[in-house]
Length: 48
Image (cartoon, rainbow, N blue to C red; front, top):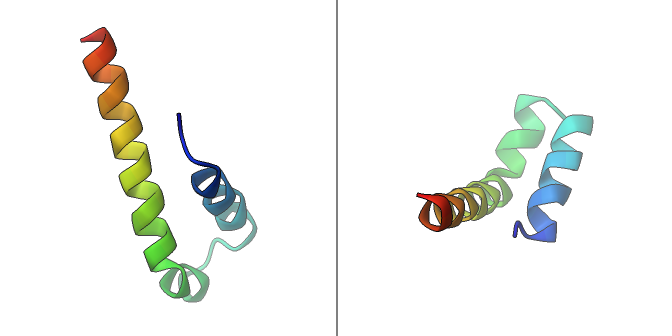
C-alpha cells in the first residue's frame, strides 16, 4: 500500500506544478518515487 505522504506529495504537486516548488520539494519527490517503485514491485511479485 502506498504511504499517505506519497498521496500528499501528489496532491501538493497538483496545486504547485512548477519548477521552483518542485526543486524545493525534490527530497519529498524522491521518497514518493521510491514508495511508488516499492509498491509496484510488490504488485509484480504478487501477480508475476
